[in-house]
Length: 185
Image (spheres, rainbow, N blue to C red):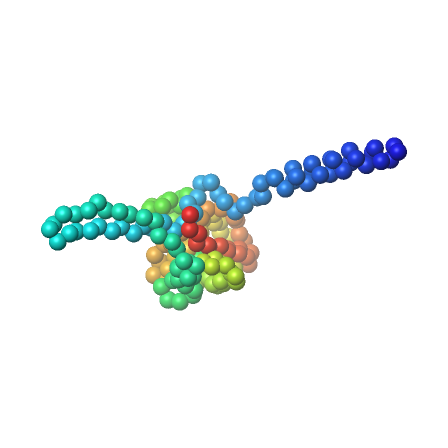
């Protein structure tokens, strides 16, 4: 009988533990200081009658189709000319500013083995509008970096990211992987 009484509290603690564990927030990739990619758009209609009267303009949010997410992915990152699939690194010795939306931060691109280069594009299977662009850089001397840009081949900036300062010596490697997905709110 004493064994049975011991099992009941143990089961109760186990059940409560499972519920408490399942309610814990999972760590995510979200950065509260970043601007996430979202699709925002609306369609507005205005009717002008033959007698010249104009009805009030009506605007409503439209729906981004999964095929539309795929089109954004194709345009931005599929490895074709003009896509935003070039990865650049900033020379921290020259000052790398925290990326801002108007791209006015200080940024001096690294050269040598860490020069801006076209990254490897990969579509994430089974997920609409979800892709990665990555590259492994090899240092050809002593350098430091803490900012990366994603750009087109013409140098038009798509996005910027800052990370913890990395000091590299000759033949050290630095892998950068941009994970991008399109979501509709």
